[in-house]
Image (cartoon, rainbow, N blue to C red; front, top):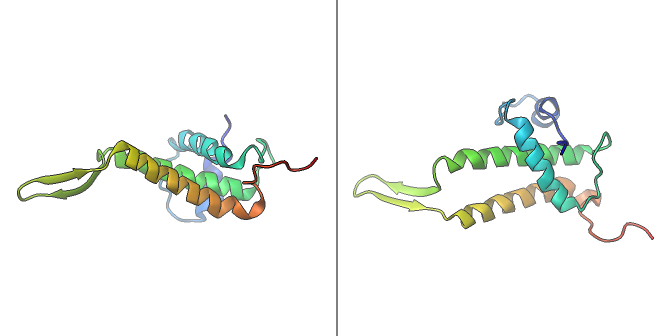
Amino acid sequence: MTAWADYSYYLENYLMGKSPTVASEDFPFYAARATASVKHYTFDNIIDGANVPDEAKRAVCAVAEVLSGFDKALSGIGVTSEKTGDLSVTYASGSERERELNAAIRRIVYMYLASGGYLYSGVMSC
């Protein structure tokens, strides 16, 4: 699968001068996963190729950042709180973390694509 955004788009159009949170060597992996996530919500209303709308590319960049951050957070093994004296550690369940990730992705997709008709799952024309 071809990602809808590449690293140069991420740097120049999405971040517009801000510091990247996804490394250049990791971006293709996260962008491909992000594209698959965005495609899930758009019901193939956006066709792969040169005419992918800017809103979809921005959504892919935002989701790629979330996926990258999620993977980095997994290295903390889901610790939600920790106490040093009389050691007390609380862990988030895997399903809870996955729900949070899916909710974040859904918010991003709706933020970028809800107004363009890309999330319509019905028949476009007869």
